[in-house]
Amino acid sequence: MNNISLPKNIKLFITIVNRGNGEKITEMLRENEIMFNIIALGKGTAKSEILNYLGLGQTDKDIILSVVSEEKVPIIINNLREQFNLKEPGNGIAFSIPISSVDSAVALELISSIINNDKE
Image (cartoon, rainbow, N blue to C red; front, top):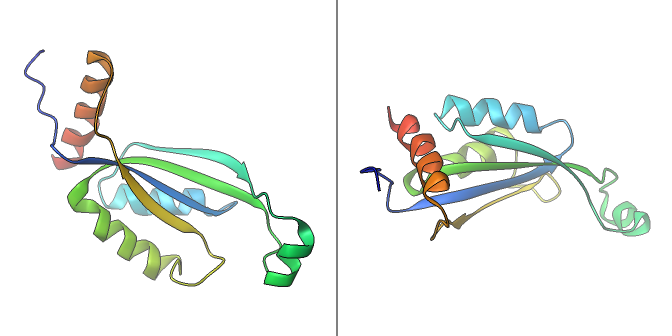
């Protein structure tokens, strides 16, 4: 390949929050030099009587997908807990999964450029 320098440990960072908070979270991510963020619209699946019982009325969600280097994950989770109160139930969830293999050279180059731009 073209001497692509890909960090050894990259993660897909997923955040699911109530609709409308996605843009605020992507702003926070950009402040932490996480530039590749996609917001998808989602809908919760719990029935309304269960939501009412739990005190969670809103089922429309923003799902934010970000590509981050492993060392930034604890920083981002900390910021989400503090700034968006994710430590409290019902405010959202955030987690990461490793990206352990890439199928094509084009995808590898794209991920590499995203992560390497984060470090510059």
